[in-house]
Length: 370
Image 1 (cartoon, rainbow, N blue to C red):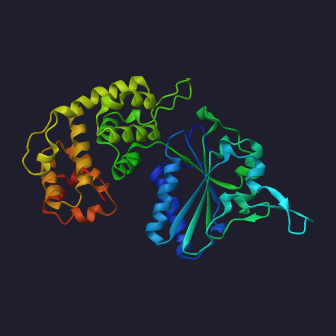
Image 2 (image 1 turned 180 degrees about the horizontal axis):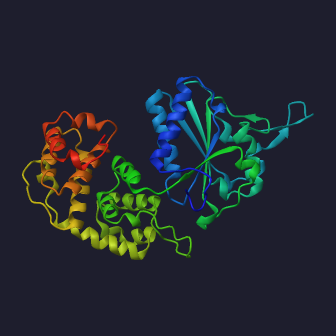
Image 3 (image 1 turned 90 degrees about the vertical axis):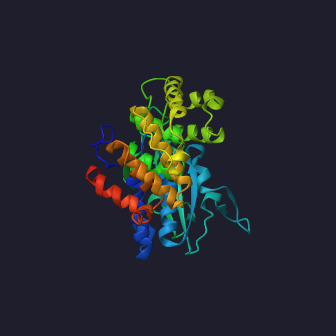
C-alpha cells in the first residue's frame, strides 16, 4: 500500500492505461453511457506520466473502436470559478441573464467521436475552483452547460506530499471520484520509451541506473531533478542534436541536475567503444563487450536500431542470432525490447527461425514472454 495515500490502489502507468482503456472500450462496445462510469482521479508525483497516460488511453480507444478520440486538456490552476460557468450576458429581450458556454465545453457530440475532458492539476487549483468542478465530475454539468453523452471525465494532480502547488481536496469532491495513484515503474516506462522512440542513450543509462528514472526532490529546494517527464525532455534534446550530447549538455543539466547529468555524460562515452550496430544487423559482427555498462548500452542501441528497421526482417533475424552470443540476462532484455517495438510485434518475430531457436535455447530465462 502507498505510504502517502494508503486507502487507494497503486498502479504503474501502463497498468492504469490498460485498466481504464478496457473499461471505456467495454462501455463503448456495450453501449453503456459514460455517465454510469465514475470520473477518475489520477494522483502521482510531478512528471510521473499522468498526462502521458491520458494520451495513451485516447490512442487505445481509437485503435480498438475506430472512433476518433478528442482530448480537451483543462489546466484548472489557470481558471477561476466564473471561467467554468461562462460569461454572463443578457438574453435576446434583455429580461434574463444567460451564460455563454466556455470553449472547453464546445465538444463534438457525434457518436463517431469520443471526447475526453481532462481536468489536469486539479489539486493545484484553489478550493473554490475545485468546488466548481463538483458538478462536472458527478453530474457532468456546470451551471446551464451540459457535457455531451460521448464525454469521459478524467482528472489528475500531485499529492500534498510532493511539495508542489497543491491544496487539500474537499471531501465532497473526493467522494465524487474514483482515485488511483500512479507510481514510477521502470519496466512500464521502458516499454513506453521504446515504442515512443526515446533516445537509446537515455534508455540504456536508465537500464543501468533504474534509481535515476525519478528522484523527486520533495525534501530540498532543487529545481532540476530527474523524472520520466524530464528524461523525455533530455531525449528530445538529444534527438534534435543527432545524439551529440556535448552540443546540448548545459540544457540537459538544466533538466535533470548537474550531478546526474555528469554521470550521464560519462556513461555516454561508452557508446564510442561499441561494435557498429549496422554490422550486427548485417550479420558481420560477433564481438561482444565484456563490461556491464557497455552491454546495457549495446542492447539499448540494438533495440533503437530495430525500431527504425522493424520491417527489415532479415536484419532483425541477424540481430536475434547475435543475441545468442550475449549473456542470458542481457539477451532477455534485448528480446523483451523487441516485444515493445509495437503492438503484436511478437507475431512477426515468431515466424523467424532465429527467434524460434532463441526461444528454445533461452526461453527458460524468461517468464510470460509476450
